[in-house]
Length: 114
Image (cartoon, rainbow, N blue to C red):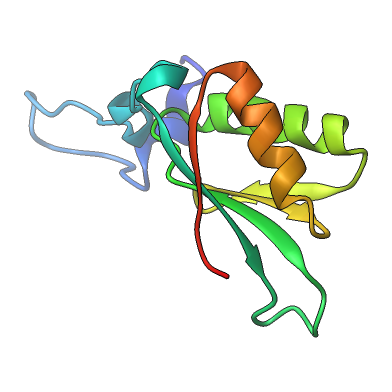
């Protein structure tokens, strides 16, 4: 038996001889080149106990590419952060620095919010 039993999404057995298991990962979104990305950088304090977070939204592409971009931003800013729900969160107010880094990488960047 192959090791794909984890990929069956809860289906243990089917009496249908034509049944095919489907994986959710097959619908991976293709990453647009940086020139076609429209990213928005904003400063957010909501639900963070008053701590400020620089938020990057609008990325179109795979989760791995988003994580790679998040790692690049965290490294260049020298701070912590995370990537979740299609957004990059960088700890602290680094909006201007993030915009400079993204422009150097070839992304179209806009400042949103105050």
